[in-house]
Length: 80
Image (cartoon, rainbow, N blue to C red):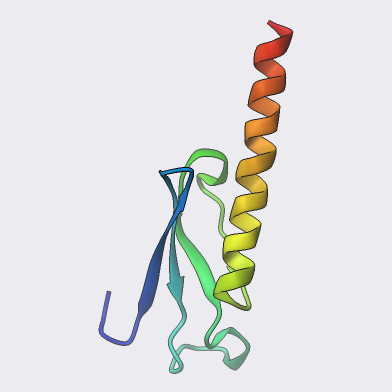
Protein backbone atom coordinates (compact mmCIF):
# COMPACT_ATOMS: atom_id res chain seq x y z
CA UNK A 1 0.00 0.00 0.00
CA UNK A 2 1.49 3.34 -0.96
CA UNK A 3 1.30 6.47 1.13
CA UNK A 4 -1.61 7.76 -0.98
CA UNK A 5 -3.78 4.70 -0.29
CA UNK A 6 -6.13 4.55 2.65
CA UNK A 7 -7.30 1.18 3.89
CA UNK A 8 -9.47 -0.32 6.60
CA UNK A 9 -9.94 -3.73 8.15
CA UNK A 10 -13.60 -4.57 8.70
CA UNK A 11 -14.51 -6.96 11.50
CA UNK A 12 -17.93 -8.51 12.11
CA UNK A 13 -18.42 -9.94 15.59
CA UNK A 14 -14.65 -10.09 16.08
CA UNK A 15 -13.95 -11.90 12.80
CA UNK A 16 -12.09 -10.29 9.90
CA UNK A 17 -14.67 -9.77 7.16
CA UNK A 18 -12.89 -7.59 4.61
CA UNK A 19 -9.98 -5.40 3.70
CA UNK A 20 -11.21 -2.18 2.11
CA UNK A 21 -9.10 0.26 0.10
CA UNK A 22 -9.95 3.79 -0.96
CA UNK A 23 -9.13 4.70 -4.53
CA UNK A 24 -6.67 7.61 -4.62
CA UNK A 25 -7.46 10.97 -6.18
CA UNK A 26 -5.07 10.24 -9.05
CA UNK A 27 -6.68 6.94 -10.08
CA UNK A 28 -7.97 6.40 -13.59
CA UNK A 29 -11.62 7.21 -14.05
CA UNK A 30 -12.79 10.31 -12.19
CA UNK A 31 -16.01 8.53 -11.18
CA UNK A 32 -13.93 6.10 -9.08
CA UNK A 33 -11.87 8.67 -7.20
CA UNK A 34 -12.45 8.45 -3.48
CA UNK A 35 -14.58 5.32 -3.78
CA UNK A 36 -13.91 2.24 -1.64
CA UNK A 37 -13.44 -1.28 -2.92
CA UNK A 38 -13.07 -4.72 -1.40
CA UNK A 39 -9.44 -5.72 -1.75
CA UNK A 40 -10.09 -9.02 0.04
CA UNK A 41 -13.30 -10.49 1.42
CA UNK A 42 -13.77 -13.42 3.76
CA UNK A 43 -16.65 -15.72 4.69
CA UNK A 44 -19.76 -14.89 2.67
CA UNK A 45 -17.96 -12.22 0.65
CA UNK A 46 -14.95 -14.30 -0.43
CA UNK A 47 -14.10 -13.42 -4.02
CA UNK A 48 -16.55 -10.50 -4.18
CA UNK A 49 -15.41 -7.50 -6.18
CA UNK A 50 -17.53 -4.50 -5.29
CA UNK A 51 -16.96 -0.76 -5.29
CA UNK A 52 -18.84 1.69 -3.06
CA UNK A 53 -19.15 5.48 -3.09
CA UNK A 54 -18.24 5.77 0.61
CA UNK A 55 -16.70 3.83 3.47
CA UNK A 56 -20.05 3.88 5.26
CA UNK A 57 -21.79 2.31 2.26
CA UNK A 58 -19.15 -0.42 2.05
CA UNK A 59 -19.38 -1.31 5.74
CA UNK A 60 -23.19 -1.33 5.69
CA UNK A 61 -23.19 -3.67 2.68
CA UNK A 62 -20.70 -6.02 4.34
CA UNK A 63 -22.74 -6.11 7.56
CA UNK A 64 -25.91 -6.95 5.62
CA UNK A 65 -24.18 -9.81 3.80
CA UNK A 66 -22.78 -11.24 7.02
CA UNK A 67 -26.10 -10.96 8.86
CA UNK A 68 -27.92 -12.69 5.96
CA UNK A 69 -25.27 -15.41 5.91
CA UNK A 70 -25.55 -15.94 9.69
CA UNK A 71 -29.33 -16.26 9.35
CA UNK A 72 -28.98 -18.85 6.59
CA UNK A 73 -26.41 -20.82 8.58
CA UNK A 74 -28.66 -20.88 11.68
CA UNK A 75 -31.65 -21.89 9.56
CA UNK A 76 -29.65 -24.64 7.86
CA UNK A 77 -28.46 -25.99 11.23
CA UNK A 78 -32.02 -26.03 12.55
CA UNK A 79 -33.16 -28.15 9.60
CA UNK A 80 -30.59 -30.88 10.26
